Image (cartoon, rainbow, N blue to C red; front, side, top):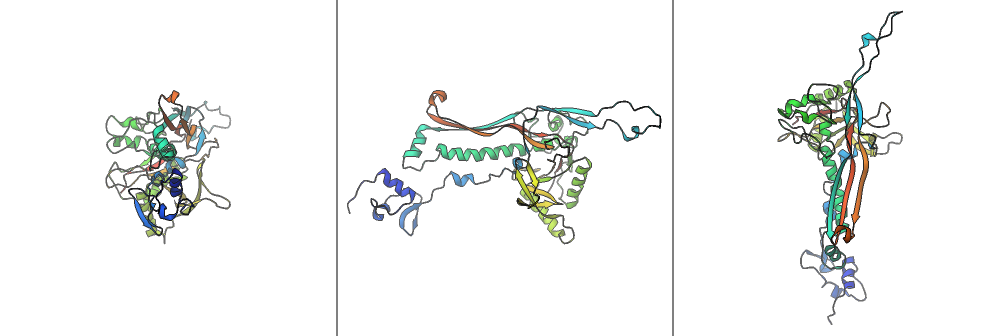
Length: 394
């Protein structure tokens, strides 16, 4: 059989999987092969090569549950008032039949403030690499199409990890303020009770939105069920007590978030008691731009576990308390019982996640393709007192 030079079209036919072309009989086709990575198939040796591409890696560990549970709103304003105390007590309301009116009062409030934070991730591909990926016969990783997909998923993951990061540890803090990062749920759901766990000089790490929460206990604090940094076994009673205390503070817990280890521990607790106490079950939720909402009507949605009827969401980046511990449990209130049009805890969006790409070498000063994923906003909490956290668990 005469030997002929394979053309670029022959190679394209091979990589597309077409094995019966008039110009490329199978006898020649099987000789088109890569040096490494070949496996044998029913078509003969060297006809299929396993390639581990970016899409395989992109499917690993890409959940973003922390971000998805928060209702999304457009950026409303940079500051807001938080009521700290009622304006008066109930015994001052009563007057005699002809008594004078009580003195005017006003509630005690604090001023919270923040501004949109910007998160950006960039990547760059040289024109040479891009041409090799488009025109060459090599297996080239790093084309702009591959990286655009990968960095989009990675950016989502890192945004989620930013919101879920641990800032209040045992005897130390990982950061004293949010800086340019989105605010952490762990700092939002903290307060005076945790200052003793932060260590001398770091108590202000519990302050959020410019509010002083470390000087004295106040209605600016979230509820924290802790054990002074000592690990203890998680029990159903701890969960019930925490939910009750959050409700006493005016909280309306509508979603519970924890990690996979704690989720498994909760399963074990309620499976042992299922015959007597059906606190564990499942509910149907819808997750979207409004965060977590229980499904009504036809009940279309996603089936998730629930504790006492409250959806229980698993999130891989949930903070724990060190060696031997399981992840913390967050009792969050994203509802809007006041009818303000915004949830008590939400993500205020100044610029939604966006992708920008540039290819002009005169602007970039080199022959490259540059891409960037970016978003702008912050996590905001209008009702700090009604959020809850359970920590120091094993």
